[in-house]
Length: 156
Image (tube, rainbow, N blue to C red; front, side, top):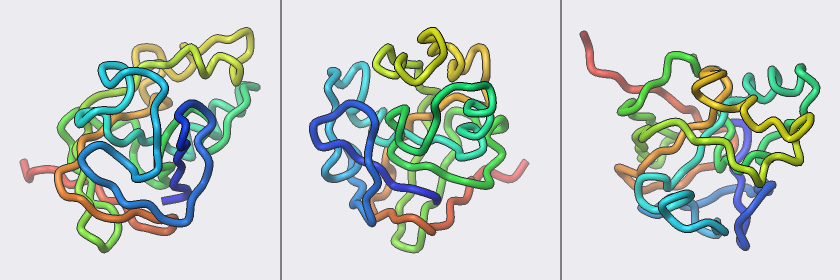
């Protein structure tokens, strides 16, 4: 885990915090300006992004940094392109368990970070390795930078 980010009024960018409690509706202290069918709610409680994706997007000339696109947790070292809906992630040592519910659609509020406002640069359809993911909370817990994140999959 590289960064944990929240925005109490909602919107972007989300700013770093030292630690946050993660409950059924997301990170304590985090807000959403859009209604729950767009952002937030139990199936979109946590937004995740990879620091490697941020680096690729920045290398294309777009402004990219942890929290810029509204993600709550910025992780490192996961095979981002291999993630799929239903994957469960174990986070830290406090018991936090989340399940990926689907890729996050780019939001027009992020247009300011992209050359010519091209938010499709983080679209799952065009760039699956560079899209953000939403997750639901299976087991509540805290999260902080430095926590390990592990993808749990059933054995084949």
